Length: 98
Image 1: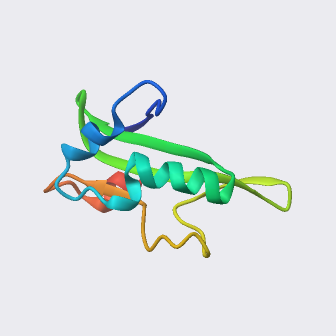
Image 2: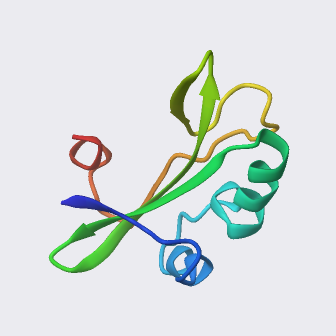
């Protein structure tokens, strides 16, 4: 398993999320666009791949805090309950995080 960053400017992120039954509204292109505008950050999307097929998706945002770039998924104040990692059925969350 490995993560591959997804180019939101070139690919169809919504279609990738539709492949996963656990896709979250807070991972959607529209929500990431909202966060980009409201939090002044850089949206990050990545697919978790295994054997050339996507088995998970991650969404977050890089923001600056005290001059340091930090990846949040989410941070307090984003009006976002959870973004994080969506996985296909049967995929171990523990292995995915490792």
